[in-house]
Length: 271
Image (tube, rainbow, N blue to C red):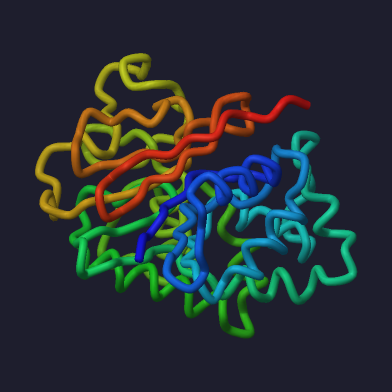
């Protein structure tokens, strides 16, 4: 049995199918993990969603910021951006069923055998695994509740940018969503900074990528994430693994076999 963790697909259906062929995926023996951002910016979000849902008995998905944006757009809580490319999902006659399935997916997945956690953007440095699991579950309960539409409308904020344990309700859940799906850099106080997206070394003075922040609460944990294509899959740390290699931007779609950390790559298909 092998477990393959796949980076941001973002509607790159052809590349996903090619990658599954390349790893010779066997639904009877193998498992798939997806780091989030199944949809948007690429050409075939609907086809990706339908395929991953079909494979859901053999896979684990965590939500990314583009997946949440799709949900918010469907429920009229956020206007479409000109760069959005998931209209095929919004207009599909199975959209309700697909998006109901999507909102059931968690923000965090943990495998105790490999002491590995998967989230879309990473693990906030001040949180240990237990707290991160607790907070992710809090948000998941809201997304699965009858009040999920309200949360989708309230999450579009950069505030609060600093974690405080006594945060409650929508400010608390918004910070948790941002940490799990949008985080890249932190300032010296550990606050999230959203206006820097470039590769490490290009950021403003005083900022660090989240995985280089001092006093990490659980440094022995292996963290697998996507979201940050500008890293080009490189973090400089053996236990922090970046899998967004920018397929939607002309790069590649990457999978890592968890058992031996072997990487398998499919380049962006020609248009």
